[in-house]
Length: 126
Image 1 (cartoon, helix red, strand yellow):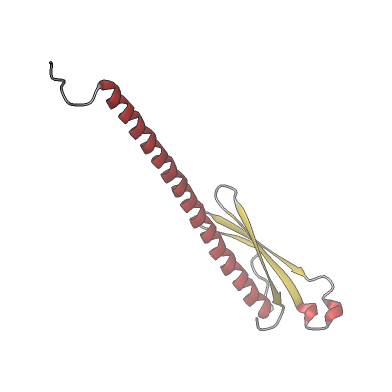
Image 2 (tube, rainbow, N blue to C red; image 1 turned 90 degrees about the vertical axis):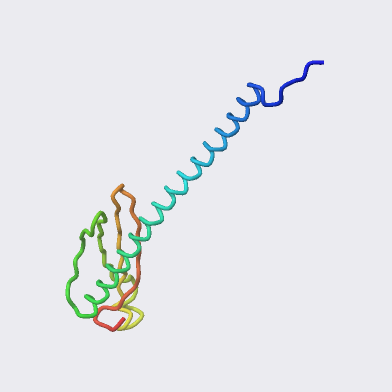
């Protein structure tokens, strides 16, 4: 009887290569999604930090009774600040009549924007 050589056939080798290619392709795709998610999270964090800074400066400006900057740019981010007196606050009393809604809109390089808002009292410690 002839002895059969031990080893893999060409078909078995090709099937193994296809399986390895599929696994590697899936892993690379997952890595790409993770990197894009990380970039988005970093961008959102930078936007949130800028908004916090802009809103804090606006509260200081209101407390000291000076006009603040309505818009600006920091790096690749642009910001716009809107101040709106709270409707109906006058009926609630003199303290409430100084209540102002501060809204900061931060726009990123790709046109993504996030809105942040807070309340502040004009001419009072916050």
